[in-house]
Each structure stands twice: as C-alpha cells, then as structure tokens.
Length: 177
Image 1 (cartoon, rainbow, N blue to C red):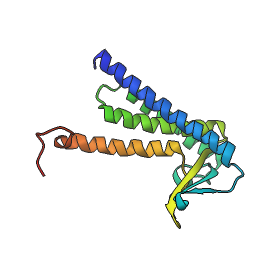
Image 2: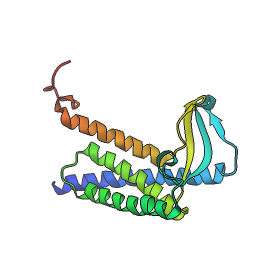
Image 3: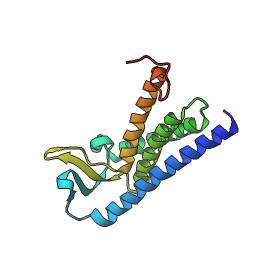
C-alpha cells in the first residue's frame, strides 16, 4: 500500500472511530442527565421511545445474570482483547477495501464506546432508545449499538460485493439482469 493510500485509510478510520465514540458518549451523557429517574418519553406516535437503562449484559441483556466476575472477564477483558486485535488488523492490513475499513471502524468504535462504559460504570452500559409499533418493539439500545449493526451490515455488503464483482457500482462487465 502506498503512503498516500495508507494515510487516507488511517484518516478515514480515525474519523469514523472518533465520530462513533464521540456521538455515543455525548448521547449517553444526555441520557444520564435528561432521562435518569424520569418517565419514558415518546416521539412520533410512540415509534421512538427514550428511557434510561443500564445493561449489565450483552445484546438484549444476554449474560446480565452471570456473576459479576464472569461478566468482567467476558465483557471487559475478552472484549477488550478482541477490540484491540480488530483495531490492529484494521490499521495494519494492506488488503482492506475502503468499505471494509469503514465497516470495521464502526464495529470497533461502537465496541470501544460500550467497553468504555463498562470500565467506568461498574460493568454496565447505558442504553436509552427503543423503536417499535405497539407491543412490537426492539430491545433498548444506544448509538454504539447502531454503529455495531451498521458496521456488520456494511461488512456483509462488502463480502457480497467481493464475491460478485459484477455488482460493483459502475462496473459494466457484470452479468446483465
């Protein structure tokens, strides 16, 4: 990889990481100051609900009932090592396409922000958003979770594009439909 391309990718990754962690931490601070000990706030006819919650587990509180020491080793220590390894791969790999770099940066940024929460909040992550109609609702989540899901979706898209090169934008050599 030439130095200009490397610098471009590192700048792109840095901006995505900073934006993801910054937005997530800022919105969590707003949730703490505006939603803690307050009733749920509904918007758009109940489509969006904001309420303060602290999650000791992973996705949808998975593992939240495990003993504190197990949660620490699983969600703080192991996740920290995984995030460090993914960040090292993201920075050092010479084979990543820009879409893959953005996807991994979103995943690492979301993971880092939730990991930071766990370190400073006794193993808990601040959540505050919920989407749905009537009783059909998502679990409660935060901006970092959105970044994680967006990153995972972009990784799937990047993998699909790599496996079907004719579907790349502007590529007229692909099969016609």
